Length: 303
Image 1 (tube, rainbow, N blue to C red):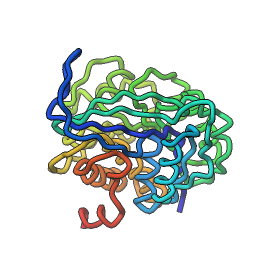
Image 2: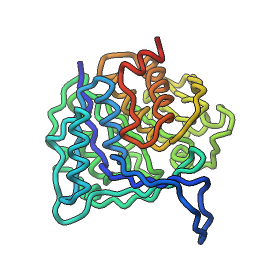
Image 3: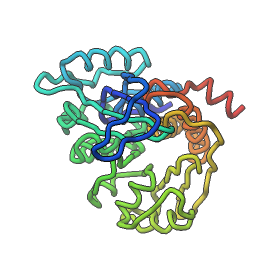
């Protein structure tokens, strides 16, 4: 069985809940404030670990109280933290999140995440069957170095280009599986997309990306499910009808679940169905990393 290596961000999520999102310049009364482990890298590593994969995280924390709390929490989730460094010269990454009516707005302050370097990602010893995962909350040059080493060893690379940022053809060329939502797809394909668009629009946009036809592109569409382009053939895995409470970690849950399944040697079609089910459980709970389901929960849902 392969291992999952995640190079990415680690944040403390400060989550405020309210009846609605404030307009610009407006103050609204909130209901509660919560502190959750977050950051796309940490979320994806926790997702993979809770689903039974050997999951290692590569990243940085500040030498502060948030960093200590996050290290303790991630260790409790069985994430291997041997490659997570404490960085005294800056603070731990922090995300300020407002959740209202199951939707969220997020402001991320990178802190130590911005210092994750090519030297940091040189440490993992990859083998064939491993899966290397990253996202855009650490420097893209670091992701490129990470993926080059992974592919040289025969590992599968997964990129979640979130938050939506431009990236080079060179970086996309190092990606085996691209997992993104409609906003990120629209930016990379240089077209305007909406979650309610017909599947044909997403397929057309995905085919515009400067990425080889042998690559796999997965477009996550929230409650509508996921659209996958595999060897040029499109398929839609419908979403599962659930009452969403907090969608903050849903995309990260999907990425981690897909990576965990592939590390176990399962097919991409099996991994997509499994990840879709895992994400449907995640959105029914508050928080990002704490909402990730266990393998037993996903098995019960699919059973």
